[in-house]
Image 1 (cartoon, helix red, strand yellow):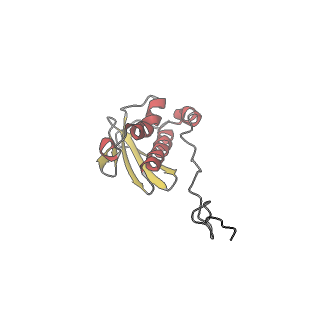
Image 2: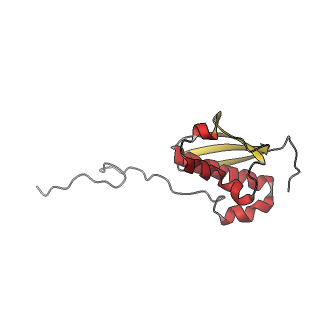
Image 3: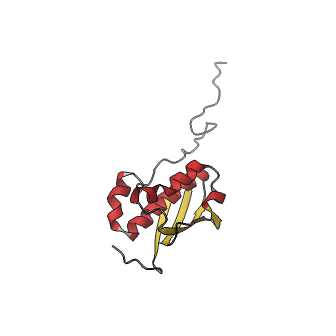
Amino acid sequence: MAKKSENIVFQGTGRRKESIARVRLMAGKGNVTVNGKTLDEYFGTEILKVIVNQPFAVTNTVGKYDVVVKVVGGGYTGQAGAIRHGIARALNEANSEFRPVLKANGFLTRDPRMKERKKYGMKKARKAPQFSKR
């Protein structure tokens, strides 16, 4: 377990679909900043805010850490998942006792589902042109 100090910064990288989130976790009051904006400004829907804060809820650390996130790529849902993954990794680095509960909830596992590539002769990944006998 790491020493609790004001200067220590824990880092974690989270990924989901095309999104990559670089998360910095430091002791604080629970402020979450995403790309220079507050969590409420960046994510419009309440569900995405809940997804981002899930690692804090399961480890009973709500309001104990400030989070600064830089996230790029993908859409809002993928970005929220990437931030959750990064926060979970940073919490694991901050205190190794959180690992079992984070792992049990699946927050440390990288979601491997990606968009399937488009194939030649097709309109999209699986959508084929309309078949005509003549």
